[in-house]
Length: 485
Image 1 (cartoon, one colour):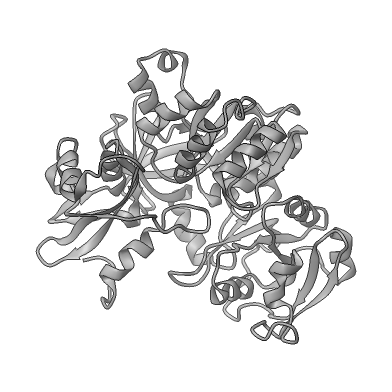
Image 2 (image 1 turned 90 degrees about the horizontal axis):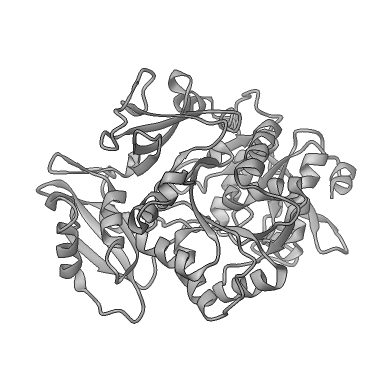
């Protein structure tokens, strides 16, 4: 791949967009870009055509690399009438990958930033505005690989299951760590719990990362295939809260350790792990599971603070009492140097010399963080602050609730009201919206309880599998100039 890109005229620093499912070819593309001094742009395969075009334009991709089927929509109008005529396939390799040259040029609004020699560019989808590119350097990825090799005890005896999409750093970090350890790679092209369990058994998978929404189906499939998960030593999850009851089910179903993680694309990604110390590990089961489900302590090499006020150049640390809420800010070798051709966003993210995550949380005397919300997801109802994650945890404590998402809707009296969407456990008695609200009142203040609870078959997802709250909120805010009230 590297030779083909060089032969096609790729120069160091050129951006190469990658269109692959989870497969060995995607792994090869990451290393081909590294070998040829190119900046790889892993493309979210779930983007709409207009979103995809905006990312390619914003990143100034000169080449497209991928499987022929995934490159086909941009391969030229002759065989694909809806394709972009500015792109033509140059090479289809016998191994199953194709190379195309793009002539889009760059976004005319682009400004030089000194970040052109990046290695990876991960772009937002652009659904709320212009796509924003996260720059990651070789140094970022090397530091993260070194940290995770030690923290997660990777060795050549391990096999990593690529279950989450490799076009997101939620999984792609393991491309580097597992390879550095001499470990094996197993690839699941698309999420299917039963296929995941089968692959886990056949490949001898020892560790993987799933978003919490994947875990119940995975546990169902594992329970139906006794012995299939015997090789698994570590299951990680992150991206949204996890209920203590689900942690308990993991412990009783799987023969492995469980670990909650927290991180961002901008931090390569991991910032914290919920590893327990000896005293916590020996504690009562409910308390142990509660702490396992926390956001966790800072990863090795990460300096982490929780401060007030949020998004400010001057700030102070909150009290380490697990009650006072502040913004999580970080420093470390894994943190991005900035955003692609967006100096204003870079400056805003590094106010006061620390990277501002935009996540709100508390910290306890042991240094364990507990996220409570994204700063932009805070609900202000009747002058009271409601953290959606706190309400989600209350809903997830109900045995009939499988998944929950809490968000703000406009309210004429209170400005904003708390609303929830939930997915129920199959085979459980349905508690009803009123029953769920009453359940919450026994755990959180009345003003925090959802005014409305919608029972849905499934929650909308982003490309990384996280719950897409923007899609849940949008119907209620449509026609309004602002998305706060």
